[in-house]
Length: 470
Image 1 (cartoon, rainbow, N blue to C red):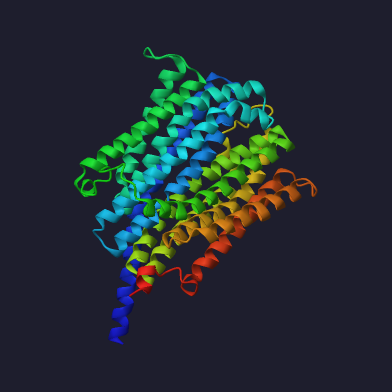
Image 2: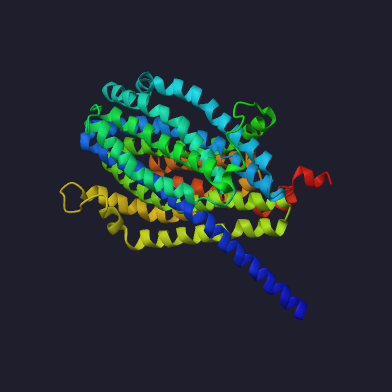
């Protein structure tokens, strides 16, 4: 009996320790994500100061840019489970961590070349997609400046992965926090011609983004080469030395991650187009509800980033019990938060919508009515969205990315978009049908991801090749 009590007490301490470790890693990542939202919101607000046409053109250019950026971030995210696994296997695995980070830099740089070429031809691409030629021309001026932000973004994300794998992500939060006023100041100068800078209008917002992302990468690079906990890895040493085996590892894991994120982003872009076919009011209400959902999603996104590292460390150590704790602790915390947010959306929809629209302004009544209806579905949507994001991070920690990519394609497109279109148009539910389709897609993906996680031992996902070779 004493032995049983001692075992129970030890298990309780292990779970408690995992809660502390997860929160220590996830909270700075969550704060970093929220800071990134603030940067994006600043861009939107300042574009609105120029005028509605500039705001619309900026939205067109941004959607194209962000689709490529999200895919690229997914590819370089492969560095997280690889580096964490090496550190779990050997606590001071300096060389292997350096190899992973360096080749993630290479992969991000490689992606920039085709992306730059595509964004340089934004105008004909948007016209081909049926957009207004005048808006396409303005969007092209914006993206021809904005596109150069891709390289510092990818390099910054790799550095953030590096310090997160070492479980010291606070510097990324500090730098992201400083980047919010930096971005506003850069926009103020180059969009409106202040302090002697040229008044570039919408193009100035692109210049501001390039300067801001360069600041973020430069500041974090300075930390990486000066902080005693990071500098011993010498991640910039012999930067041009090829390591094709590790480069292939990045693409092997990262390409499915990038595709998974792309499937999700593109289905939401498709939902925007569907809303535009319904009515302007439906599109406006959709944008408001989606913005509220996107802000709260930053919390499970932070837990997803943290769980990849925590599971990766346990995976590298070959500790199945630790893998279980590392996965379920952030999952429960993240989904619990989303359930709380769902309750807030159900109980206080008008308060949330009031941050975007004044109900006393004539003409806003229909948009507010629709946004309330969409938020009710978003409450359900939130729980599933958080669950699938964190479950995907759990599987990435096990370096399992290909099958989750297939799940995402089936769930988001075959189930989500198809059912959304069917409910919206043939069945006449319009915008509500689109949202029900999105919720169905997210629910499908989350169930499949969780099912795969619970069967990880049966599928052999929690063992490494070097363990089988012993």
